[in-house]
Image 1 (tube, rainbow, N blue to C red):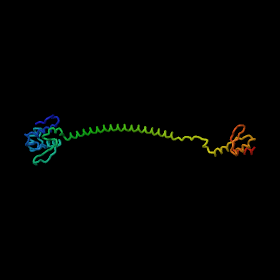
Image 2: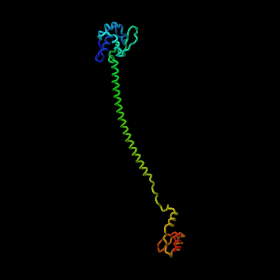
Image 3: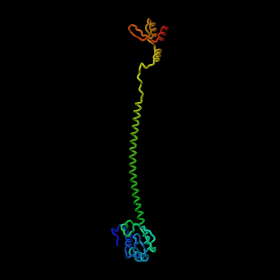
Image 4: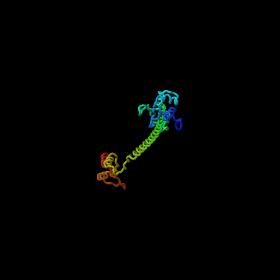
Length: 232
């Protein structure tokens, strides 16, 4: 009985091994266990003299067992204790479709390396994408920072302009009388004509206004008038 489907999917050893296991003419020498999940070698002499020469063109039992190990078969104790039994999770009597999953150990490692290479390539592509996103975010952050600096500078300038104290409005009513008096003592005062100085002195003392020739004038500081009278 040959395996159904494309034979190129399976190695030559696995195709031959499955044919050996399901061929009833080999049942006394080798075949599937009763549950169909393991391979039993029931008669090593018949396997080496009849089976192996027919399928593999040799009689080397050790080479046959080594091939089983290379494809991932493991030995397990036989139920009867008289058979050499090998088991593989994908070697099933009723599941020939699983045979494509059986490969040599070296081939499995090569496949894993290839898969790892693909994963590394994918990770590098993701890293490149993340770096681009980081650069974009950094550029956006830089622009926002510059905008914030400009805004802070504008606010500082506006605050400085709004906080300049205005000069208080000058008012003659707010000037202290002491300052006026001091100024009157420091500055030379206007003097009336000599014939009117005594009246002007009296008016200064009394704080009155004098009218002379129709002109109204404020009486000068009496201290200055006395000085003038003494020195005249």
